Image (cartoon, rainbow, N blue to C red; front, side):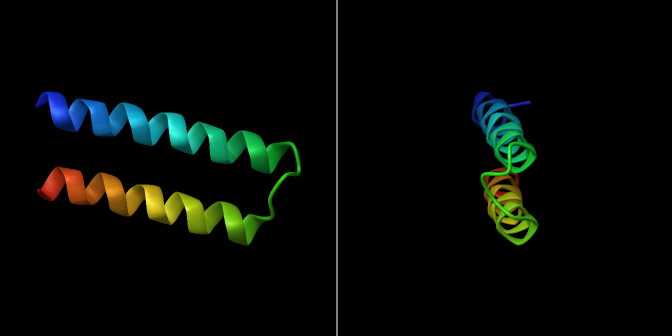
Length: 50
């Protein structure tokens, strides 16, 4: 795995963990959480494909 991809995966995992944590604490609703996760997934896909 390239360094850039490894960094992107680490960033995605940290971002996803933050989204789940904020959702669990009631700081965002399910629609907002899914939207953020979708954005993070798209960013990871872009890095993988790029």
